[in-house]
Amino acid sequence: MNTCPICKSDSFQESINCPKHKDVICMDCCRQCEHYDQDKPHIAHWCRYRPQEAAERKDKITAIEEQIKFLDDKQDRLFREGNQRKAEDVVWEIVALKMKKEGLEKGA
Image 1 (cartoon, one colour):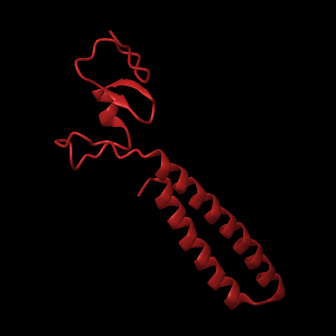
Image 2 (image 1 turned 180 degrees about the vertical axis):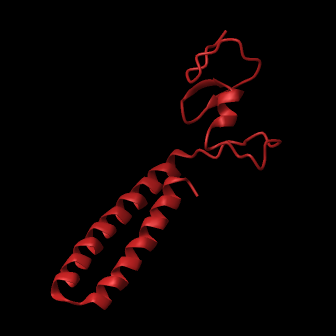
């Protein structure tokens, strides 16, 4: 009998080979995962975890973080130079990037 590496249970009825954990896990843990597709539980492949997509998402998040840092420095410089209007425009760019980053982190 297998033991679920997540919940440590060994008394589960159903199990699945998880691509994220690279091990057999119980279906309860699978259903609680953020990659489980709640909209299509009747389909055999309900897991949305894709290692390639996760790596690409991580790269995009890193690029956005770099853009935010650059714009934050630009905003500080503009405020110091007295360009209040331009600095406020940069603030909105930063807000938009932070929202985009948050969406990527949630896996949207």
